[in-house]
Image 1 (cartoon, rainbow, N blue to C red):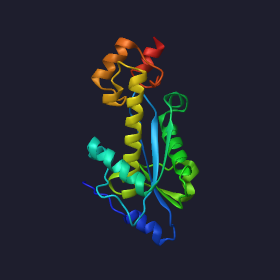
Image 2: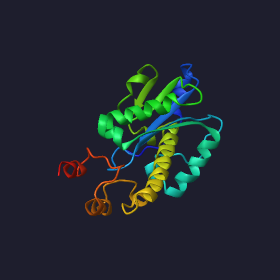
Image 3: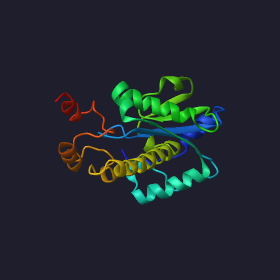
Image 4: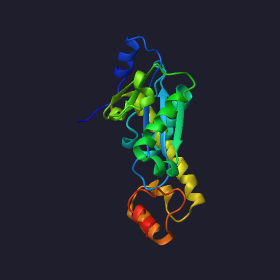
Length: 205
């Protein structure tokens, strides 16, 4: 099914008296390297940037443009959980931790949270609902997905300068053939997730 994001989930929450409604999403659950990054966004209903959508459906140029527009007009909070922590507590718990920190870090407290996916972080259970494919259905979650994706991509480009040879600036840590070849040639670096295959087997070796 093809979705197009709108403001209906937010409007429903507003109708219940919840004035500050945020969308929350994360980026970077699947890569072999780098942090998982979450963003929480409270849009201004009177000043919503045009063109918001699931970040995966937008070009890099469009994401960068919308990132700037969102930052101008919305309340935004971003949180990251490192590869080391991901290895310690697992990726599921790291995603929940990043989302919790992002929501709690908003300049103004959110009365209600729209969470992308099918799990609500325990600390937000009293004021949140999950929305499956929310990044393509809710404008607030779409905005959060853009902020999270752009922030993480920028971080990975910086890591590419610190740890050259892996191509982080191109694949953002995902397990592409180029990345896998670099790992085999260079071995893992400090931002690799050593509990993820194939790094787990390399760790054992």
